[in-house]
Structure formats: C-alpha cells, structure tokens
Amino acid sequence: MNPVAAVIDLTERVEAAIEAGDWSGAHELERDRRRLLEELAASSTPRSDLAQTFAALKERNHRLVGLVEHMKRRVLREAALARSAHAGVAAYSAEQPASNAPETAA
Image (cartoon, rainbow, N blue to C red; front, side):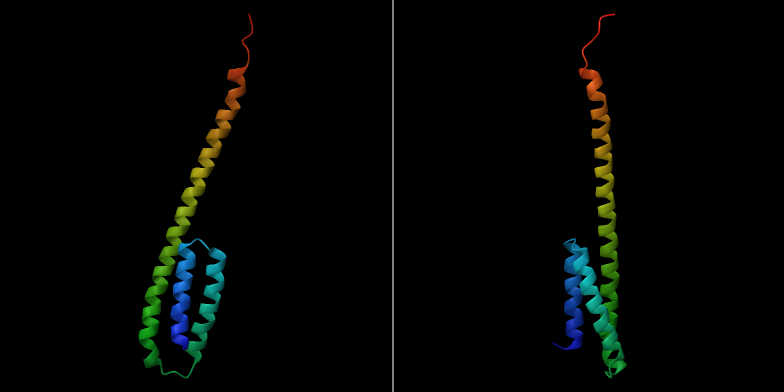
C-alpha cells in the first residue's frame, strides 16, 4: 500500500475507533497515522504532489477533532446523568429507613 493510501486508511480506522468509543485503539492508530504523515512529509515526493492529499487530510483532521469533542461532550453528559441518578438513589435510600420505622406511642 502506498504511503498516501496507508494514511487515508489509518484516518478512516481512527474515525471508526472514535465512533465506536475505542479510545485506546484510536490513540494507537493515531500514533501510527502521525508517524506515516511525518514520513510522507519528509519524503522526496514533490510538495505539489502532496498538496491535495494534505488539504484533504486537513479537512478530515478537523472532522475528527469535531467528532472527538462531540463524543467527549456525550460522555460528560452521561457521567453527569449517572452522578445525578446515583445522588437521587442515595437520597431516597437515606430516607427509607426512617419511613419504615415503627411508630412509637407518645
């Protein structure tokens, strides 16, 4: 596989890993992708031949950053909801023993 195709393939795999919530997999793939991008940039391939590829990858990178931010916000919302639910259950549980206690005669 030529270096440009490999970078594009890795970009697609990074995106799929992010969408699947596989953050460690996305991180490993991104590390490989970055290494290939650096090799491609340092290669003897004329810059004019790479300009279109790098422009397309720049757009994909912006989309990936947006996707990561979206997923991050989703995870934070889910965590806030879980904390809220946990707090509600804890408050409810704290009240239950008092309401189940037998009444005492005065």
